[in-house]
Image (tube, rainbow over all chains, first blue to last red; front, top):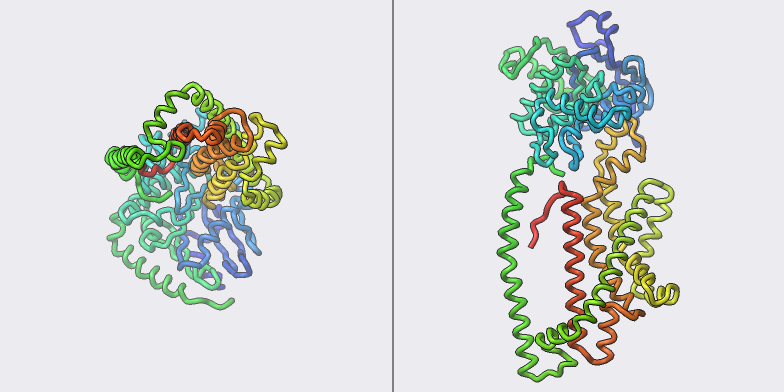
Length: 277
Length: 271
């Protein structure tokens, strides 16, 4: 694998990037059921950045996210999150997870769902503390007045907002999101993306987003890493130079359109199986 | 659970189930009344002897004449059903919890539970009489072996159907297996458990009657057996009617319990 392909071209000087890396994966390979799922992944994610992982189905981008979350152990290589192993980082509530399915507990209302993981992670918090924190997080995601609604009274987008609130309630350093808007319609998806950007700017969290959507990746992220298949590996990285704050009008920007074309070309290339390098 | 907003859907479903319920009661009532009328007419026209098929009016007469005896027997049987049902549900839940929480024990226990389910349990009634005598105990035992299985099975299904990514979330914050069991798996299994409980309620009625058939000096099962040896078929039918009423009462009690315990569970239209 070519080293220069891993680092985004241009942008910030290398020494700052190195210094501020919150997440770094070095030569990470994962073999699951005798199948090489990820090969030799090197990834540096600076603190406070918004990074997207994009690639064809089966490229292992979800597995990579699980490795970063400490849910899958790399077969070889190492991952560090602020100097800790992913499992240690998760135990210190540094990792917030959001999946495609909101996975809310149907018997709890929005505010109790939002504080549910925090309650397990920190047993010293009282019920009132948890409620207050849950309410605060619901307000952050724009659901302040739906606190007492049960999941079956919420729309798909609202449920996903609760799931984001639940992750943020842990006050994690990094938010790892696996196709969080994949099950939503196009318009809701745009709104959710825009909300996520605003949350990112207000909280300064580091966000790693796995997505299928080229538009979403460019609209939201600072860096996009393209993964290829057979085996899963990072084939290209793209620095999205569009200035923040961004809103949906950015999608009409000529630079946005140029980036879409560029990323689409990269993605097409990533569909070609690559041999072992 | 689907990803669609289902608020409107469930509201309209409730409204339509209500009109459906009132609308569909009528045909059932008409059919029932018609059956009774035809029954009465056939028995009278063909002068069928009361000990073969009693007319509905004769059953009603018997019901009124033997009211005190029948009510006493109903109370005894209802007590057996209630006690046996509660024991079955508790034991069924306990077995399910043990199977899920203790992996190796579960692997040992589950095949045995399934094996035991295939024993024709009605045939155990005489053995239970032999072991426990003629009192309450053999009836409770029989109800237990007949009714615990749907409780265990439905609760297991609910506990095992928890989404993997939800478990990932719990694991990532260091939740213990016991926390995952009681905070996630058990509440998640409640809708299934309540479905199993409704089946157990129906089976408990069967268990009590079978237990009384095998050996009892009281209860509706005893009345049915005693009356049939006396060729008092009208009384048999009167007792059968009360058994059915008990069965329906227990079923709906379980359903009301379900609505209280799991208000979030998906509702099905009822008729």
